[in-house]
Image (cartoon, rainbow, N blue to C red; front, side, top):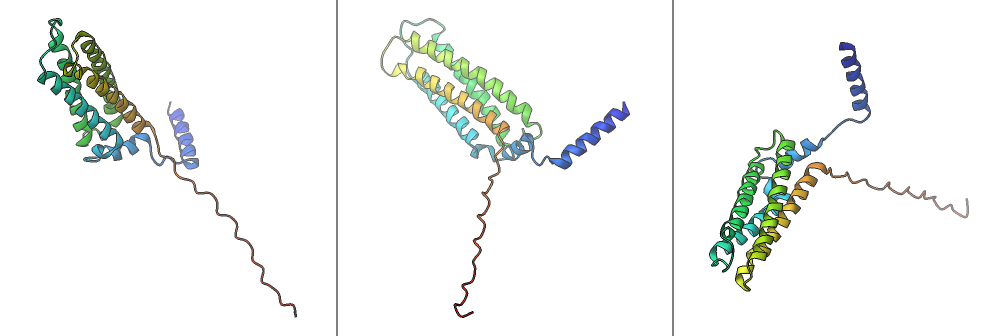
Length: 191
């Protein structure tokens, strides 16, 4: 048992001597998840836009009178779905923004992916149901498409945070400098 761990360590030392590990995904993501850095990333901006679109949809739905001739569950479906999605987004956004996810970024990012994907699909489905239930034309139709747009933006944010976690910037390789032309000194015609 001890000999296998010793040989395993030897092989690991061999591999790290050939190709040293400089940065892992977690180490690169930890830099982006330090306190105050997440809101300035592309992922943070996409999450903010998604929350604002959902907040607009929720506010517009609550400010308008409900559609006539709808089911009894109609006034509760979209606000509940949008509210749950906004609250979860808000909590996870502040977890990332305050640097609380630095210690275990993989866990928090996968939790963000799973929760946001499920809630985004739920938001899109509820928005489509709301859009189909309301037969009136005019301003009462706006929360449905806005909720769909917010759900799609949150799905894009899921992809964005996944790419932030899995993508390592390639180091830019400079092309080799062209060989300097050998200048031969001009010889005198008298030499």
